[in-house]
Image (tube, helix red, strand yellow):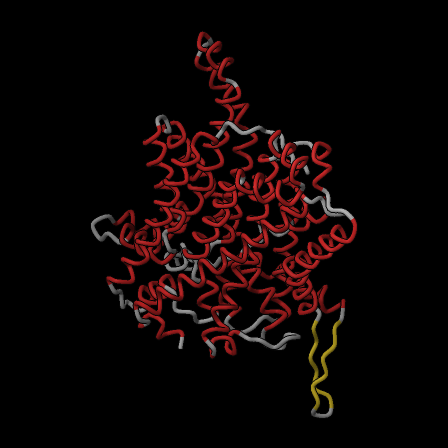
Length: 503
């Protein structure tokens, strides 16, 4: 059935893409905004721990999320909903894809909504609290002022869901991106699918430009520190509502964060034996430890993934610098921001196709040599994901630095240019390090952008997991996924500490 996805109809592919992208965005933004309201505005008990739990999986790749849900609901899982069973029912398959992408994007949406809500609480919020109470202050004052952050989280989810084909391929959902991937793979390219895929990227780029033009006056001018919680004690829920809100928050965390990790733990220690023609299933901690230990057999895949992510990040940071320096003027800024939005949303198969066309030039033998013997192809492909991320973080940090130090920068005009560059470099060291970490994990978690341009003999962790997932999640894959979850959680906490996450 998968091999025939290239032959999907235009309307069917478009409808599936809309359902998947906007369904995932709706789920992620709803969860993220609800949790941000409960922990920031309504101040439920243990809100600090709830926030850290929500952010713990923010750097975990989507294919690990797919592995986790497949471990619980797939073949030999405790709920028994395999990819094959889901693919039999189109509605179930689409629901599965929406759920995986939505839950994978929820932590990032929570972070953006959390930042937006905190920065939206000001004197007007305090006045609304006194006059109308917490609910009106939150829904009529705080949320509208945080709308740019909320919209950005939804736009990010739509872009990252629409450019990916890993989960849709597992569940055989013929979206536009999945159809293009199949057409490139089987050399059955069709003009309408390429046009739709590029139109999607143009749409996201256009929405990014509109968002910038609408909210440009706020970029770089918001306060660094969020409002102190003590100033908004009146927001806190009281009585039964307080515990109901806390229960709701913990149920969301249990469903979005704890359950997929528990699925991996259970699956990693799962044992099935045939005794007297009866299958008996047990769980053993020793089996789980062995499954985790078997992750060392993927050392070669880890090496390739780390190399690709590192070189892609370095290249993205180098390319981002001239774009950041070129951002001078409203329309020039809007153009560059729109291009970055377009690149981020460009479906992975289209990126593969562009890189193939660039590297497969028979008149340039040296280029063919690089394509076959180096990582130049995947590195070029990953710039569509890493460059917008690196640019966005560094660009906003640069605007904030210029806005906060307008007077000092004017006074420093008389200093030697080397000294001025050194001052700016010191100020930008922290944002660049944050951009490096985020870009690294974006590259580590992506697959669709370079799936068809990997040189011979190169297999990344993402590619290996993608292949294994087609045969169901077993102990070894669950152990590897647990290692990746641990890697992502530790890196998330280090990153949050680096940017001085406060609540």
